[in-house]
Image 1 (tube, helix red, strand yellow):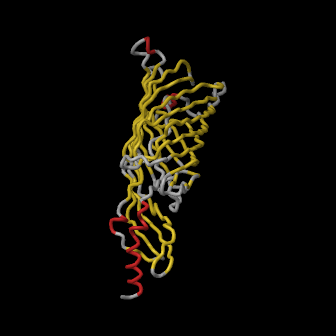
Image 2 (cartoon, rainbow, N blue to C red; image 1 turned 90 degrees about the vertical axis):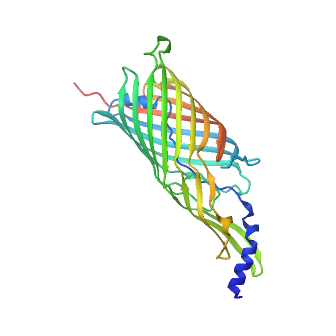
Image 3 (tube, rainbow, N blue to C red; image 1 turned 30 degrees about the vertical axis):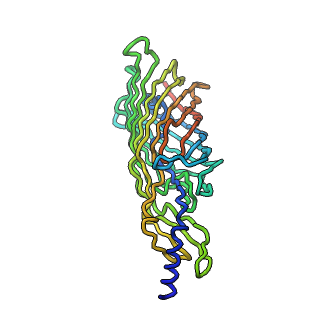
Length: 351
């Protein structure tokens, strides 16, 4: 037996101990959208309107639930996020048309996820550009119907040597969305000022590349102490689906309170083409390096949203949320997001 084959044989004997960790890994997932209740009423804003929005949010997760539905013991994290968004309103073919872009950031603190050494890669997540075309925008009858397409760009801060990432594994994600708002006051005087908002979308993900490249530490072999590593070459993700429904009360412009429910499902991430190396030498590991399910976009979430104006062209909104159920990710026990909106309306034509 050659020294190389002896080395491989000895390394193979160590595989069971090396990979017995079975630790979770998390890649960020771009799914759904940041649409608030009443946002599609923006189709009635005049062409030439420019909006700058600033978001800042915090969520406390009291558990990590794997894709099999098992809650990891004593798992938790705090999630901070903030992003800046810009929107410009114009017209296309006689219908309102909105062009938007946003740059998001996120970080995790107080993380405990058994088996990961709590290694987190935070920072820039995937930037987004989106376009909205309104098929219906009728403020008089209080009915709006818009089609939006979000494109997430794979420029986030992803580090495949970390077990927990806030950005996707360098994936493009396209999210077509339908937004529908109906004023209920026309059906009954008792419903004056009430609106129904429905937002539904699907997220289509491209494959991620080299999502995992973990060091497994040094292992003792008959040929000395050698470094071991685990790597996966590819990440596939199924389509994610998300539906939000709100009942909103708006007593006056820019002022509302809304209760909503959100259901998301699908989006399972699976790492494939796994391999283990010991001292740089590939080690046959069979089913041990088989497909690894990382996470899902599967949750049921409740929302309380409200907004009030500080001036005619400036408003503050908030979204308070709670996950009633979660599979394949951090379950948010409580979260809150603040949104600041500054309107720049077009100047009326001079007479």
